Image (tube, rainbow over the protein chains, first blue to last red):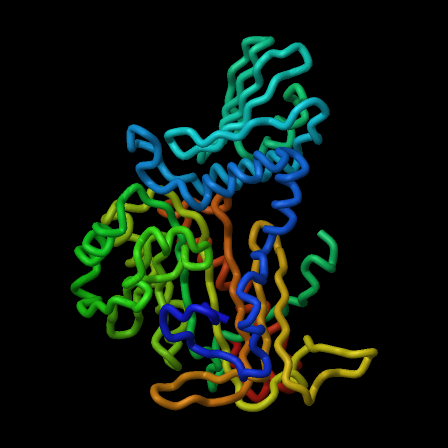
Length: 156
Length: 251
């Protein structure tokens, strides 16, 4: 139902009291579609640090974040591309990739390959850019090729 | 895709209209991000829509401090204002704008589509949306009495149907690239002015996520897709005899 516990405007309907969830359990919420699977994915592939950083980026980084006040909020298209990439990315064998939010509101993943070279992936609204230090490769791929990119990049 | 992920049957042929129309409210929702602060957003939108939507109402949630609203995830997409027009209401918040039909006055998809096209042009001119996050179509259908015996969905305990108990079913589903949530309850209380009517509700919410639309390029066509899926899901839930009682008209 719409905002059962915190009505902000008149909902078109409600249910009889017997069918309402217990209001004495304010910390129990139903996760939105996909959310449980995605939280597992975050913990599995980015660890608790990555999980925590994304939570902050999503909920506390509004327009104007950062010291210079120029940071943009997290791009929804960047977030969706990031999750599609994460689904295809192999589980890290050496270290969890680090997660950043760029001033433009794009998510960026960084890790080191087996020889210590940097690998960076920036999820932009309409494409994804990657950089491999070892081969000095910098290129962009469309979002429909994220699974191929995950297979191509040196694994973390 | 397995049948478990999308277990619904979509009819080959859909009615153009039914009478009586069970839709008590339809909500066409656009979630977005912006680089503007909430303090200037109402003015930017109102400047574009005021001739058709002259009256505005601040909703109770707008009285809460912005910091608090931002930190409470369940408030993120709640509207803070309403703009009232002749046939529709526009609901507006820092991350959401919705076109809502008037109670018990569903005007048909073609009328809604025309208003949506106008609203999208107005939003484009207001130029505060930096990116669309989600497009949604929600239809709330009301029926007097217990609707479960007339539906192809229901609850069972050890094979015995839960037809006579109070029951709410909620299920989420995926039909790539779209997704949705269905709520069916036989314990609904629908507000009509100062009175409430009890009965059953079929509440269908379907949406497209950020990578699957470009608001000012194909937003209207995506709304068409969402409406088509929502309509198919609704009619696919009804048993044939029950559908006949709604006097379907096919073209």
